[in-house]
Length: 493
Image (cartoon, rainbow, N blue to C red; front, side, top):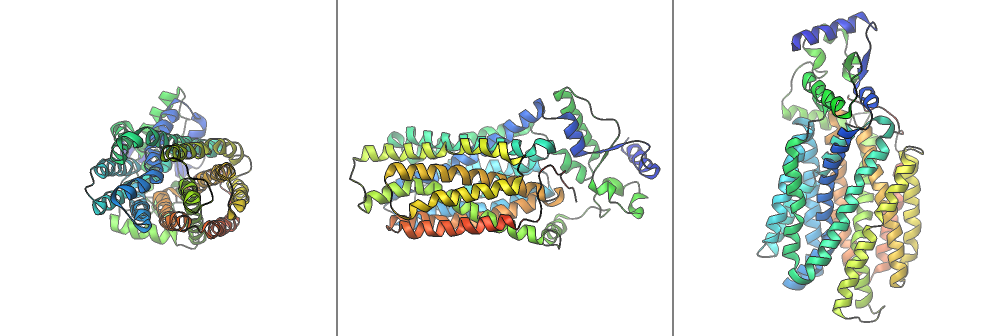
């Protein structure tokens, strides 16, 4: 049956346009965003929710473990840095796995590691074992970007930006759940129970992953055309629509040369005409990312991911560190420990909720103004809101400014993720996105040294100036992005 389909496909290519061909983007646009995409959104969003909960805990675990084990400020910072160190490696590893073995396998593998490491962290006997388990957790969490790549490849191009921002709502819900869980669990049960309970969402995602289909775009790129068509048929069935009449095409079909087109086998495989080993795939992916066409894009994405990650997680940590530093540095009156603890969770909850209105703003603008202009506006607003924090403000003003800054930088970060996924072709989407995310994690590793060490040392002005410089450089990088991706079809090659 497969050989017959291949011969028919080749015959149509030779006959020209007597029968229409359709790309995957055209098929998805015809079927629209329906029930199937809603289910895909829920699953991918659940993956992001579990990652967000784990990342939110960074604001609470460090101070609690520091108090119990009498850690130094540097040792406390390393608890956060260890997570980002694991993410640095994991982001690229799982991205490559998604390109070589499939999005579904990468998501399952990353989620399994996240769930197991989260549970193991709760049983840590000493500081060293906790560092190891948190590094392993970071390695698993580093695969979170694969969920967005997978989701992206099911969404029509016309509304891709808004729905990709929509999935970030789950991240915000995850941060709110993390703050709420910490508020409930930490005072009575402590940090071990918090780590154990926070691993439950990851286990649930792993359970539901058995129902997740592979990306049809990935399958078709790998030459598994029948499987891709089967999934497209299921999408049409669940959405109560019909596939268009014609032949499924992709970039690699239309770009094949005459020699490849004459072979029955090569037209539905990769443009190399033969299967490659995964080691060859690895080097080919890296070389493609540094090719003449993608080099500038790759370097700019690395720089911007570094800046946005540094700024975002720095703001998350500053929420707790500023109030603590103000008390220790003598800028506020001494309060009871109970009031301080309540203030810690309230501030974290309020600032986590800042991401919700930001996502609404982003969803409205991203498919109207485009990715680049929207990111530029949001980055500029972040810079402006952080300026007053160069000098000490009262707690209300500080919380309000951090609220606004986090609202804008989190939305800009979300749009950057969308842009990175759209700008890379399917063949290196996972690897390219993974490497960019890894570069961002370096920013996450460095930011605790600024947000925690400098602020704890009563150097708030220096800390904020460094943050402003990073945000400014990120804004300049966005201006240099090569082209706009709004409304563009995804490229396979």
